[in-house]
Length: 365
Ligand SMILES: Cc1ncc(COP(=O)(O)O)c(C=O)c1O
Image 1 (cartoon, rainbow, N blue to C red):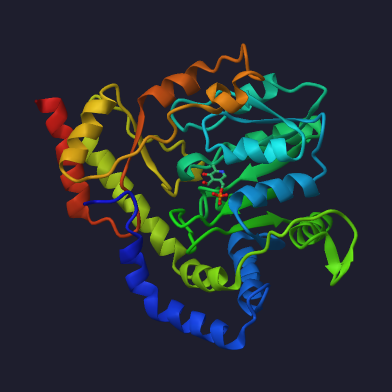
Image 2: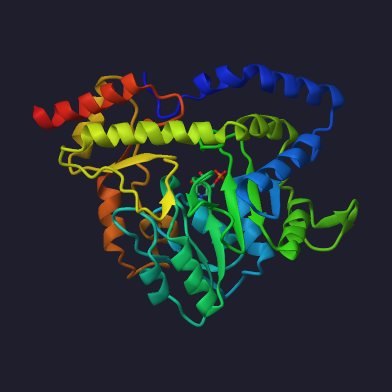
């Protein structure tokens, strides 16, 4: 079987380092906000080029805490994408705000500056672009719109660790950003984990307070907070993988470019790089009118494939009623035709060739 992500192969390469780190933690028993969390936060902030990086329990929590700390709340509108994982919009709902979904660019799958600007109302407080599948949204243009209209920019970087725009990391453009360390992410841990980044001292202080029961001083609580701390054992894993993230992302880009070369002449749309940023291919996603046939042929050859995402958020049961009348033609058309192929740092050229060969076979039959 060729899986979507080969986590076993990745683990085998770093096993000694991780087991050594686990053993140290098990011996010193500093399980909560211990030395590895502190070191990881420092290393991640340095890598991402931000003043503060604050570990928390998941990517969903990272977005939630970032919105809370930036003061987004009831009555506010947040402009975002409907072509994303549900957590993007859940975080907006958790703070009592309303997600306003705008349409995407059919090539990059990211929300466009033009669509964002058209959706701004007196209630708009923030824009939350998602750097979908690892391709940065048009951050310079989106930031200019936010600055012009006095809006907060909160980046959903769940899929974009290491992606850059003009050599500047995603997660370093906005007022704050949220990253996910779900195991299959470009930087993934061995369970759930997340990170908030910001250059603002006040936002960082609030996120630290919210993630730890609203407390700055132990057993003194100033606001109603949450239990959303990054686990010390996960920080051991993340430190080992952060050292190798550039190599992992380069290997993903290599596999993606090989796929695109091998599939170039077929009647499907291979991922488009918009030239604004460096895509880190969290997913390699095609548009294909014969999606069911291609996925069936791959499955017959023991090759995984997946649809991210089959139902855009404005059409999900949870949002259907509040989004009645919302029409996002590009999002809807992309959701009906998208499919993702296996991609990870350990995908061999031979396997890329094999997968591309199976797809070619469908069109030649
Ligand atoms: C775009 C996007 N946003 C947010 C999240 C939420 O992250 P987590 O699963 O770590 O809560 C994910 C991860 O699945 C995601 O892909």
